[in-house]
Length: 134
Image (tube, rainbow, N blue to C red):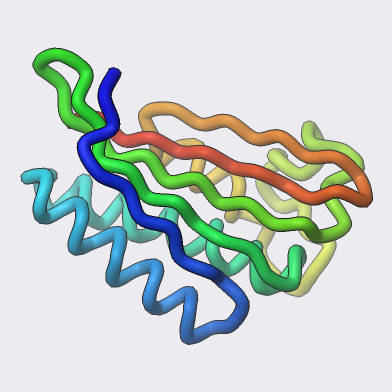
């Protein structure tokens, strides 16, 4: 798999969440994703960027355009150095939230993605990687 191009943006505020949404949409359009897939990518990106602001304090997103033979993809990696998630299984369950949200962010992002990976260590932060293939 080859990375055709990549870009990293800091995420620390609600304005940054909006910028991540716009960036994800621009990249999805440039790779020729359908409107439905664009919406899925933007929705997942928005949830994960918002999680950085709400729970991690600040972090970054790396966006990569991928080429894997005949497939093109978009991979987004969200990483923070926040408090981490003590119980990933619980955090992935719909309805679970340590904040005021609906508890659908992580599970929703997983359902909207072709591939999903989450790593978290208490006291060190969280890294979530999503990939959407067309």
